[in-house]
Length: 283
Image (cartoon, rainbow, N blue to C red; front, side, top):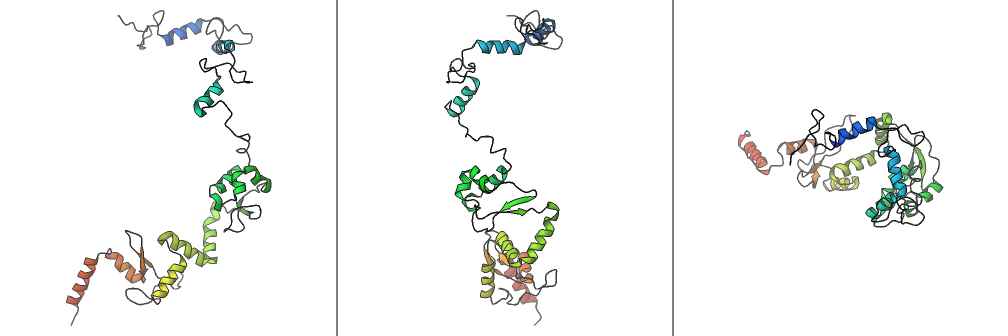
């Protein structure tokens, strides 16, 4: 069987009709076609005397209505006897029934929806069960969000509820660094507690318990911390921990902590250093 190519130079597709492929045949046909017979339509005819949109609309009009009661839309799938919408539901959900909640769309458009979602993600600790399960119960109490304000709890130990909420003025990104410095200066113990939990997984109370157990001195040299912080105040004893397991081993002064780090926790190197000192120290 011989293979004939489209007469259009460089096309290479097989001939469909009149020495042209399907694509170029349709282009030529449409360029010479008469206008659509529907009044007011300026498009060229696609099949018979109708343009493509009116032709397809006529085909749909001839189809029987969807088998779902009170639908009235023409069937898209004649085998399932369903219109486009109900066929999609049947394939995705296994049922032609409405799966969206009655308030679908109206919640998302509400100004408090993103605020509700943000607090809901925290679970029962962030929001009471009534509000987490019912967005509209949330909006009946909390309404009219002020500009540049965020919803916060009055008592952070209790979930957000009708008796535990307030609008708090937001801090701009430009002022956040200054705000954090000010907060740390006003709440030094909370700041230290957060720092210890983040870095070593212990609380400030646990840190102070270790320090008391060591009689407030270094676990290696048995001396108190001598270095000062950037403001000239007494520096807290650094926490020594295993870099492999993360386990806290004790509290060391800055000098011992740095020296131990320089030896990379290598016991053999430390023994070798002790032997070296013993052999080289003047008698």
